[in-house]
Length: 385
Ligand code: NDP
Image (cartoon, rainbow, N blue to C red; front, side):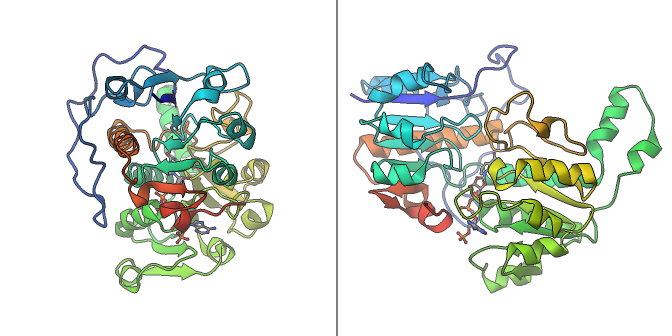
């Protein structure tokens, strides 16, 4: 019987919820483009419940234990004495979410001889060293599309929050003030601006679609060009390099995976080539941006604002400079873990487990690494060292 090791974020400080703000979730059957939402044989959780924290257990315990498997759920993931490392040597399956990633480094993979499957409950498997997973023939799978739209909504929110100076203005209200000039002195309209996305995959394209009604000029940079009819419908300008796009945009949003080609992409050189007063929104991965270069650009005023929800490492230490740099709109890594998204990726995780235990192939679109090579979505969107 298999040991399934699941790393989830801690419960709320106020305790695991006993009631919720809303009574249910909208029902969706398909994602844009036609891919069906996760379709396990059964789920044992209430959609809309908090599933991503330790007590929520992604709704998996009943299912796994009914098959005689052992489920270990912990949030204790760092260091050799962590519960994660203690259970890793005899784990067959590891599950974690990018919000609270169980980093699977080459050293850790070497300590996990029984490991067959690493599941990302969500999207983005950069917390797994893919080259090492390839070498150890560990299958890496994620729940492709499960939270892409969730993130795209967050990106639009953050762009508007930065450009319109929402967060400092809200703070004046909380502090008892009515300081209109302080609020207005950094507030602009988005209308008429040039907005570009690095990558027009599931999230990037959804961001472009959502921004179209704002009457902005839309740009994208991607290794593969979108179909001509999509470019025409959204009036998109494609760039063959990130430098070309960054130089003309007032707002840049980053929506590519973190892999060797994208790590450190936004450093001093690329940021220096952006317009003075540009805004940068990164909900992709923290390491795509050079940490210190972002701080320098905000302090000098070259960037007017930076927002996002992704950091390195996660959780970010208390003294991480992105917590205190000027003109930022950072949140913890939350954009893809709305209760809505959790219901989908918990169901997708269950679907992957059902396939695995029944000896059926996983959906091709869920695969990142399989049989010792990049596969499925991984083959299209990632690169290995
Ligand atoms: P997709 O796989 O649909 O899209 C990724 C896109 O990135 C593809 O179009 C791919 O291009 C493009 N890309 C890859 N490498 C490069 C590169 N070097 N330069 C330009 N474009 C590149 O994934 P999603 O849109 O669903 O997700 C994207 C990323 O967002 C995830 O990998 C994850 O890191 C992050 N994410 C963050 C979440 C959060 O909560 N903050 C939640 C979900 C995802 P092509 O395939 O055409 O080569």
